[in-house]
Image (tube, rainbow, N blue to C red):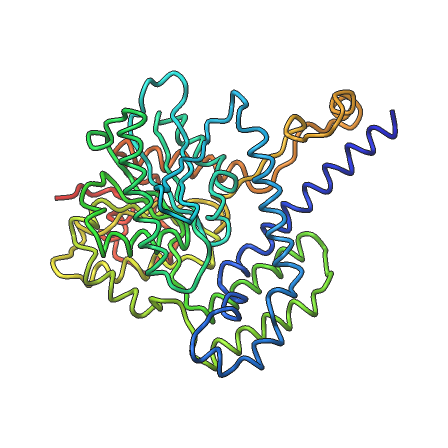
Length: 421
């Protein structure tokens, strides 16, 4: 019995280590610190000798992240037919396509014949490639509360955010057609919402600016909007990983990681490499293309302890747009939490394959272990309640904690206390 318990315990520890690896490397990979070393352009070719020193293929953390995501995705595929799993992969590839083109579809709860609304979701970089895993808890709880269907478009991290916005926008367009034709859902008649986190929020704005996607949306929800440049993103990622090290009391490869972070930051500054669009261009895009009509539909969700949030700057750009006023500005919900509050990963004993039933039973009886999780469930539930409240037309519970320098009337507008004209 002791051997069985220890075997189960080791399996749990291995899984949790993989989850931790996934999250601790999230921002470093998401910022493109190592993507820049693969980016094929003339500048990189001139600096190929330098770039080769920090080849991402030799970085163990990058490969560990891929392994962690692949493992979780494999577990999802194994458990896809379970009764409580409503996620499915919706294939959008045509006969001539050589690419894997798909979205992840979360059907509404079983007591709904058809969805009450449709939510188009984009996640942050890296984790956004597996939204059915990283954001499953958040999106499932929202779906359960609203009876909504969720269409989540996966994307791989890259420097060209224009292209990513184009690709994900096309996936959303084709997924609507697929749901109408095959599922007989009247998508055009259902309320539709865009919900996005971090980089996904930036991609959503780009898509809305370039197409008519936003015109038919009932609402646009942007969680922890991020518009940092590449160099600043690398620095912020280092700060995040440092905080994880302190939390876990881990110093493994700390010196190597610090060196790689510093090197990546210097290289991005030295050769002028950045995301497209960069922060300045993105600000102008918001000012020129996010009309007062679109601004009225928009709700920003900001966390009190989020050093990666650029929502305040986004709001300033909205106020600079033609025809904008206090009454047309996006509303803002202030919430407890951090940049990763939308990500909550939970592993129960029944989710682990290859563990004997006797070990599962004894794990609960002897060591009291039934599940493990990463993230703050209380903060996640607060976000879910606020999103659902916004969808149902309610004002923000409170405004953001951006300081006490704003005028009272403007602060009230931020939290949605003033009625739109």
